[in-house]
Length: 105
Ligand SMILES: [Zn+2]
Image (cartoon, rainbow, N blue to C red; front, side, top):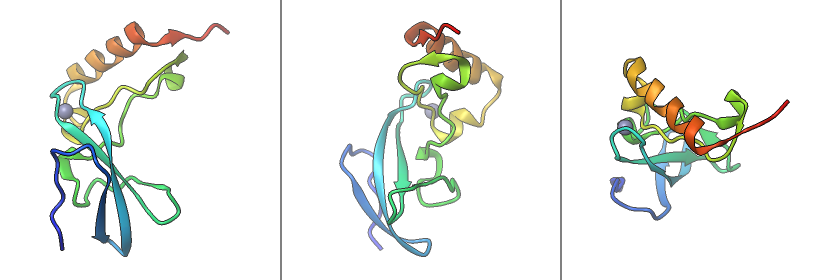
C-alpha cells in the first residue's frame, strides 16, 4: 500500500478500509499550521473516521460558521488541535467571529 504524503495539496488515492478513498487537501490548521486532509469514498461522501490513515492530519471538527450564526469559510483544525483543551477552541472561535460575516436574524 502506498503511503500518504502529508506535504502535498494534490488529491491522493488510498486503498483500504473497505474500498478506494480519495484524500483531499483541506487547508492548514489555524492553530498549529499543519496541512489537513479529508477522505472521500466512492459516493463522494466525507469519511469522518479519524482512526484511519490520516491520523492527526485528519480534519473533521472544523468550526462551521453557520453553526454560530455567521457566513463565511470554515475554520480549519487538525485532529490534534481540535481535541485539545478549550484554549484552541476559543482561539478558533475568535478567528471565526473576526473573519466571517454575522447573519442578521
Ligand atoms: Zn493543528
